[in-house]
Length: 499
Image (cartoon, rainbow, N blue to C red):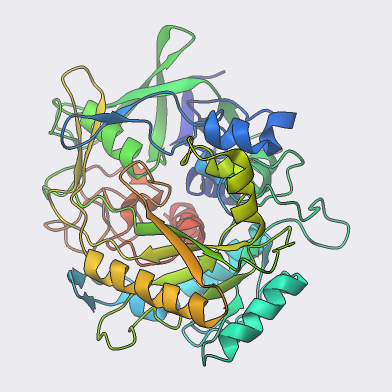
């Protein structure tokens, strides 16, 4: 492989993978760097115990909490990044998310661009990721220029009945936008191992399947796997990146390009800039003082609502969502967040969290439950940040905020399900290790004094450095970030080709 490229993209998830796809025919020589390998297609992909109890695909590395304790983060180092195991939900941000939004816990800052700027790129991203949905059911859904590329994924009878029960309460349950290959002749078999599992038959719309593999069909795009990006090398003035130092097969190698794109995920992108600077708290590209700060990851809870009489025979459960409380809760003037069904819980998935409960009891609960993800906005704070310990271990400092609204959303969700005929409701609130929606550490903005990146994700300080992953988010909003990351990657691709 040559050691001189036009563009080096570090990371192959929703940001880096989509960017490579968008630039595959641009005439630029592109190298993708991935610290992991291709996730194997094997029987364990669909085994709940292997995936959840034994954490077969989760990284073995540990990160440090604010108190010095360690944990295994919810990150997966494979081609396609965390999209290999995500739930394939592709909602757009609400129009209101792009403006400053007042919450009980503080203010979510405005983005430097509006919804109308993102809208055409959302259209493109939905086509690339084969999104199924219906944009007319949710009153909070922003305007679309055209319908979703594919019709919504139909409810199974049990969920169709739930949809009617919720509608009778005056709510507006809508079809959750999902990216799977359910086209005519597509690969998807509507199994129960989609959300949280790798797809053994490559029917999930992850960045590997939809973007990286098609991009590699171009003679201008290549990939280097099992290659860890150690640090970016700057010139003496700190205004240009002059090389990338990687570790592969025990060797330290330097690679060169005209443009460098960091797409490692919000924590690892911040960590790379820290390793490239002067130690544990001095990253490069930090004249604003904002780099590696403002870490966000949503306030999340899982909810099991149980009807002890009826069995839930659903296979593909994740078709329904509720946004009636997104911008304002009942008897609450502030936004609460999003409710969406998750993949059907199984006993093997619950065992990891409840190891001392007999499997028969867990399975009986799962057989009669309908399962939700309860998600509220996490607000940016300077001291919620990423640092490195003296031995180079990643440290994530997070003080949870805006929790009054999250607890209010849990309360509303419980009442909603009890009114729908589910008298037993269990809720588990997630901790710092649940970071699948991590964002915000390298925020974008128009003012170099208050942001790390410009509105096209180029560093204000280093003209040939871009960051294209959820690091650029100024606020976390309260919906899944994948589509917005992909849309911004397409927007950055347009910018790079024009400039």
